[in-house]
Image (tube, rainbow, N blue to C red):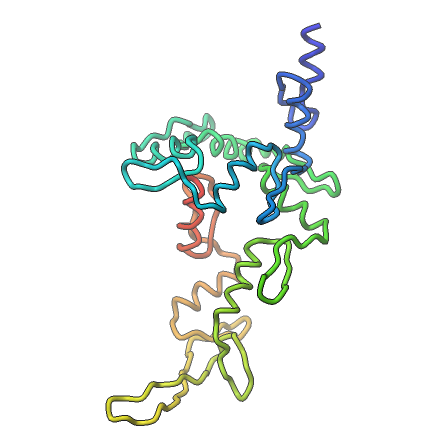
Length: 263
């Protein structure tokens, strides 16, 4: 009888055994991408109501759990506990295969799946599979036409939050006048207005040359290091690697922003 109960509470996708059928049904949402609890502010979905309630704190800005060493705040206590391990230099979760250590058990679990080439999260529409439920959630959006993120200024809509954020930055940028037409893109030569000097001279304009030109697409840059970063888009090179989850980035700044998600 006990064996029968255990079998009925075992996930048919990843093999995980749950304590009861209701827990199994909740667990299945990780694989299917079902997120029935939606945030009224941003539209993000969650598998549990408790997760949604915690998420609401990100909109109110409330962070009741504060680090005594650096002052950083957190919405939930478990994130503060993980963060404190960084200050203490604690990496208690060690990979049995390669010996790499992690501050968080979840990151170790993701890392271990890469050694086993295990991808338990399967799309129910196509053959796509992945190691993380968050990656599956992002993938499932490619199968829908829903555009939940909308610009309040112009009505532009997109499936992706980062695309909306990138779009919103265009509203705060002044277009550059190039050859009599408006453009927000950089060209090899553009005009720049120089303000009046102390003598009361009228503002003048001069042409700024961008000598470092991409051999692939022709885009030009003022500094060579900017060109070097741009070329990585064409080559696919990502030299900056996360020490926690092995994810790679083209820019050091992108890696720094990513690392905040681990602490």
